[in-house]
Amino acid sequence: MIKSWAEAAPRLVAVAAGREPADTVIRGGKLVNVQSREVLDGWQVAIAEGRFAYVGPDASHCIGPDTVVIEADGRYLIPGLCDAHMHIESGMLTPAEFARAVTPHGTTTMFTDPHEIANVMGLEGVRLMHDEALMQPVNIFTQMPSCAPSAPGLETTGFAISAEDVAEAMTWPGIIGLGEMMNFPGVVAGDAQMLAEIAATQMAGKTVGGHYASPDLGPAFHAYAAGGPADDHEGTCEADAIARVRQGMRSMMRLGSAWYDVESQITAVTEKGLDPRNFILCTDDSHSGTLVNEGHMNRVVRHAIACGAEPIVALQMATINTASHFGLERELGSIAPGRRADAILTSDLRSLPIEQVIARGVLVARDGDMLVDTPHLAWPDHARNTVHLGKALSAGDFEIAAPDGANTVTAKVIGVIENQAPTKALTADLQVEDGIVQPDAPGDVAQIALVERHRGTGGVTNGFVSGFGYSGKMAMASTVAHDSHHMIVVGTDRENMALAANRLGEVGGGITVFRNGEEIALVELPIAGLMSEEHAQVVARKAGRMVEAMAECGCTLNNAYMQHSLLALVVIPELRISDLGLVDVTKFEITDLFEET
Image (cartoon, rainbow, N blue to C red; front, side, top):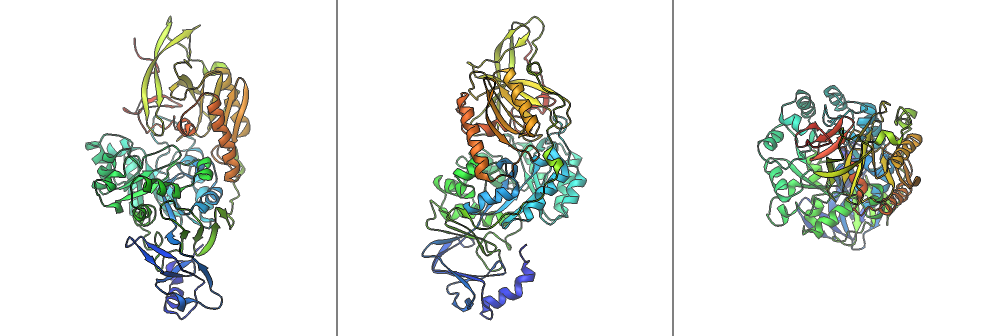
């Protein structure tokens, strides 16, 4: 653990004054000052106790016989990058392996919401994530999940989070605030538990995360803003970004594996000229393949620049803006005296190659290679035994009975939207054979099933989904099923759907793809059915094979797995599936699968 400023202050002052030598001095570069939005050619920094002690034109007075001197060789020195909103579990990795994956990309600070594991293991799961996060050589702050279940009455989770749980977590050392308040209808309606969770967070002096997944910017949005959330990452257009900052919220613009919401919102800054200090960049959800092959926050910053943002403005959105939002401006987010010595050496501010990464004053990565260890927690056995099906499933469990005497039905269908979290509420006319409604692969209508996996009830909710383009006899199953994390099975053939579901029961969770009765891809995720302790490169290879397998089954969507895993997210419109039935998220109610005739 890094010393607090109070503990380090005497030495920081002595080093800056030249009375004591620094641990490290970086010189010969161009310092990017995100406080003043300028590049200071030739400025040098001195580091002591893991913090910046001196930042100025000449640090020679800070150099002693044992001081390590890093020559920047004309490169830019920028602050370490911050991810303002993310879910580690979406990387399919533990906090230790996630840190190992993203640190070489320049991410030195993360604000994480472990609401995925909260749905599976409750407060214990949050504590395990929190504890492993604190063990890492980079900064991982935890937001206490606010909504498990995300929509009470519309889904059943493995555990529920209470206002008392939130109040307890606010006393933990690594808790920075409340995770995204997904139950926005509850806040708008004045739900007592939701307001109690927000109150507990604010009384602790911490930040309340927002999640307003509705295009309605009328009174409901204003009521949500009045309820206390300080930010929101669910905006998808310029009007959303503007509306949020006008209400005193920070607009978090995300670029994850499947969410491409920066380009459509950053025009509020680049064209409308709004104050960029109220805009923040984040990833939300990035799977291991993206982390290994494309990057993390460096990818988001490059994208923002490509969308028209000035390089230093984009960097502010991924450093000082984030730190200020969480009340940590004096602790991190800039290269300034007293702050944690998190910095990157890069030779270009636009393409942003991450050549050296320093975290808390230690060189932790160079040219894509991790140079230090990321310690692992000893996860308990019961965290590896969370998939409880109750019985072996058969093709019959995935049959959808038609109304008596019907030869065709008009079914409600979940419509996937490429690169976005919302879905469409579609309908399709489907054939009935022997009393069973059939999917329509040529018409791009597959079956979807939600298999209960927390309590072993054997329950299966069936429906239909469109947009994946699957063909032939196939099925894909995943125990990553935001946010309740039961099991989602999508397929064109009921036998393959049963095989896929049972396979995940055997391995303790993960993702599998079956075709013509044979497994063609498997990603094992034994911890809570959400994460692997293997290195990101190993998980990425398996996930890459999973993506290939989806394509072999006819899928052409970009990052289709992310779309698959969100089909049970009953707080984002328009149509979802849960263990309780098909959910109309525009009305927040269970709806019938078939339209009335």
